[in-house]
Image (tube, rainbow, N blue to C red):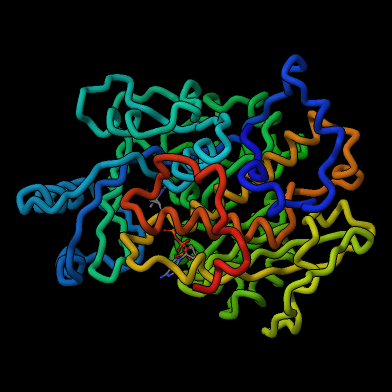
Length: 434
Ligand SMILES: Nc1ncnc2c1ncn2[C@@H]1O[C@H](COP(=O)(O)OP(=O)(O)OP(=O)(O)O)[C@@H](O)[C@H]1O
Ligand SMILES: O=c1[nH]cnc2c1ncn2[C@@H]1O[C@H](CO)[C@@H](O)[C@H]1O
């Protein structure tokens, strides 16, 4: 595990008080290692640049992820091929991307549950998937299937917005028998997406996701849910609220999904509402940056040294230097929030925004897993006197998440090809306002 703090200690919590007991981590005492688990609809992103007229002609709604019948998906794919509009074919899937990015950032293991074609031809989608996934993502638990993985035709509009057309293949055939209870129950987090519930009645994906969530709950493993797209949430808002109450520790969403889930347009107020059901929330808001919200025990709150921010909740960032906790672990829970504008005001030129939200979540998961790793290796550390969810404060995690999103905005693929630079002055406060 590469520590999120290793890039520049002074930027990470606890900034002033480095723990001398870290020296317990001597090379001869091999550190206890950790991992995170996730379930995904295994698919490749086939990316093409199109105009809005193309979307209309194929009956696609902009910004949406739509399941297409096989014949329609093939017609669409053929047209892209004939007009030579395809620019790349990369491994995709919202959880696949998140696990890959986590593994690249943390240099640590993640375990993916999903399906994979049992016979793979060189150049096929399955082949592309394997070629463009980090070797730190453990693919040994994938369920072999006699057919194709999914294809996500990723249509990029001139304004950078992406729309997905899915040819699902056998991506929803993951059966509970192909999950590994021990891996899930020993993980630092289980990561799920709302897309998993979009399978057909006879397909086992939903049942697999519910089974995994139940095992995680029994073992106290944080369950992380990323909302996918607002259209999935809108259809079953009450169902999702209940699902979050029953199973979820951390909700990751963008502001549109937040509105669909809570009926509240202001991201901060939407976060406040979601904190009634879950312990922690990440809400990305495109050009407006991102919000993180959580709980802290009153006894462990830490006041910010930054200016207090106005907003729908006055001075909402007052305790942003606190490390978030599960509500149930707080004797006197208090809600905490932070906001950050895009790193360096956003890139000069956005290649495409696909995966920027997944990237922010990967950074947050890195910090969360680093906390678990530190607790397992240095249990006596002052950092673990109370049970916190993350290693760093809400404010530091938001900087890191934002930084990682930026990295994805300036490249083509939603998957990082390398980690962040080891030493980076750009996390300095002054650097944020260009
Ligand atoms: N237009 C933009 N200008 C500057 N920064 C941006 C822009 N769009 C996104 N970002 C950065 O990327 C982060 C995540 O973006 P966004 O809210 O678009 O994610 P998302 O909709 O969940 O993406 P996806 O579903 O494709 O992963 C934002 O918090 C912000 O830091
Ligand atoms: O239905 C789906 N299931 C799983 N992943 C999906 C689906 N639709 C789109 N994406 C994935 O979302 C990522 C960006 O966040 C894309 O890389 C795309 O593969």
